[in-house]
Length: 399
Image (cartoon, rainbow, N blue to C red):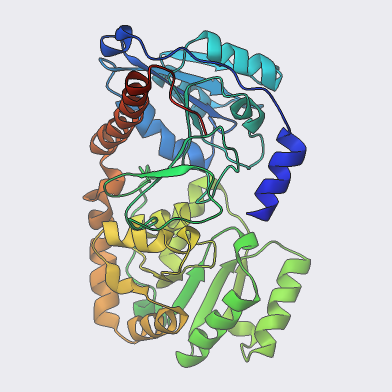
């Protein structure tokens, strides 16, 4: 919360916000204009979650605008562009110019898809070019901007009545999940490798920046409790691998039980999950795309549910596919679940046969249903503003 406040004070400063007329009668008949702004309309994990939404919007009621801050376009950029009604490249525009572009288009709801990640345009949102502004998809966190009205959550990430005090936005909840997952391919699922090797292989393919000493310590504890088991991890070559090996050795994990791998080509990535029996979630910032990818490959993921939204991502995903038994209430339960599953080959085999289908049948892959739920949130946002404006006789107060 403190870092966001410092950023807001020193970077955003006292940027003046744009004014908006109160909603008129035309909003009852014309389509709502929704703008999505991102640096990642490209071959990037974000695009895998936003493309199904762009492609499933109800064009009878919604007009879709995309504001692209992509510096190197590709075939995914083309798909995003084709899925939008209007496309604007804002890479060469200042924040003020981009804000003016949005304002002149009379966007009703402007959606930030980057938050504080690389290439974000929060300077545009600070100017409030749209009467309703929301942040979605990038992180389970906050923009820190009081000009952003809402963030999108779900009943598990953000239980009713709960609010992170660092959030400057009001949370509106999707009925099931915040994620609309699209897999990057559909390789064949192999049997759990335990049945070929006779030993359990745990694994984690999250970005290594999510791994810390507490995570490694818990994973070491799990490996020691499962004789002859191994851990396969995605770790950058060089210093990171050296330090990881030293740490794990200090916790009793000999070198041959630690398989450190580097990134593989995109077309080979999913098949790597066929080499592990059980995926282990990092913390406090849990996996989202990697968790969905593991489940798509029918590889069970063990996690736990903490006090913050970033520590409940795994619970949300696993709950939506009907496997809450893989979620511990704390780190001790997380370890117990992983160890118990490793000692139950029958359960492993059953999960390997069923998880992809469970994911397919869930809200996470119901693109049409998910987009309809999201559109209902948008309507609710607009109704709130229109209702307050009509009651007060003036535009709804902005945060």
